[in-house]
Image (tube, rainbow, N blue to C red; front, side, top):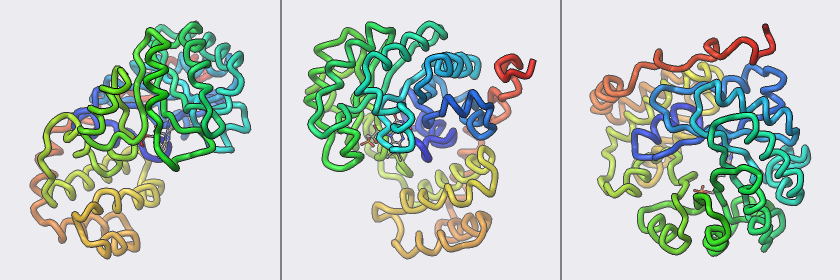
Length: 329
Ligand SMILES: Cc1cc2nc3c(=O)[nH]c(=O)nc-3n(C[C@H](O)[C@H](O)[C@H](O)COP(=O)(O)O)c2cc1C
């Protein structure tokens, strides 16, 4: 998820039971131009595997090059975004707009499949227009072009995130292709996950928004219903903050983290006014202090977590990528 699935989010997801995690969508144009921030999305932590890195773009050779970079960065799966509904992306011929140009979509899949030995997955929406069934026509063609799995979020691009995901389309897609289909959309609980799996025949479910600031949703989906204590919630938030600062730097993290306070502390865990107070504090150090004051025992939970999570030094650093991939040699 763009603006959410930073490395700290993915590592946390793995710790809480996710079988596969995915990066934010990474611009192939950014990769082509060696944009520093874009290349930062290709950092892979030792404890993230299996990890998919998702790329988006509309130029076959740039897509192929990006896929080679994704492989060199150490990802386990390269995922292609044919679902992003945001105008800034669709007007460049990328994201969900590719569902309306299946010939070109297939060319992109062929280019990527030919460029990397990694399994290639494609993430789609149902189509661009409301009620569209385009994914059912395009999906099998993408498989013929080289996609090893498909993920369907059965809302239209026009719908953005309104309404509900219509998983009857997921069931239809499953019946049309002989590769695993992953169901994405409105999977928020174990009951919901079981229903979607049983009614669609999908190989897996993908959890998005329900895991934002709430990794315990993943634990619940995997069968452990234990509610987190306030100390556990604060400790996970503090760990997330520290890892995000390490990844994005203090300046970028400050604004980025604000949305996470409500996600972690909501759901009746802390009074609403507490979140309001946190977003107004001027530094992350003060946010940390205030969180520890609200749940002093979190300090010990955090210490235990810090002992448990692998050393960030184990990360595959960008410097380790072959120089030629940067066009520098
Ligand atoms: C903030 C946000 C960012 C997202 N970014 C991406 C993205 O980069 N790539 C992608 O394939 N889907 C993205 N999605 C869509 C989700 O992967 C997922 O398909 C959708 O949210 C429905 O699943 P959910 O109900 O579990 O959230 C994003 C969704 C949200 C809410």
